[in-house]
Amino acid sequence: MVAATIAAFGFFWWLIAFIAWVVFLSITIAIARGKGRSAILWGILACFFPLITIIILLLIPPRRA
Image 1 (tube, rainbow, N blue to C red):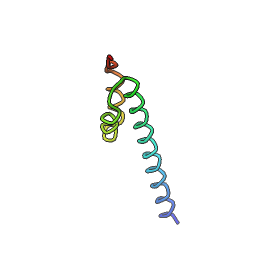
Image 2 (cartoon, rainbow, N blue to C red):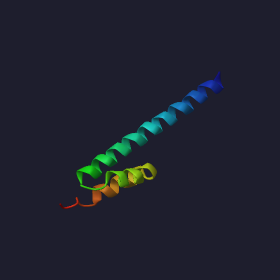
Image 3 (cartoon, one colour):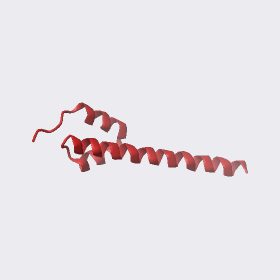
Image 4 (cartoon, one colour):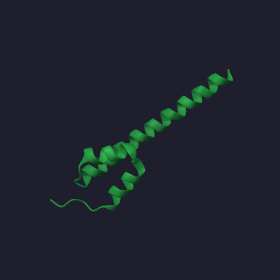
C-alpha cells in the first residue's frame, strides 16, 4: 500500500514537471515570435534550457525589419 502511494506521487511530480516544461516552451516560442526571432531555434534551445532561454530572449532587443 505504501509503495503504491509513493509510486503515485512520483508519477504526479513527473507530470507536473512535464506540464511546466511545456509551458516554458510555449512562452519561449511566443516571445521569440514577438521579437522577430526564429521560433524553431529558440524552441529547440528551450527544450534543454527553458528558464535560461526565456531570460536571454527577454534581454535581447527585437530584430529590426
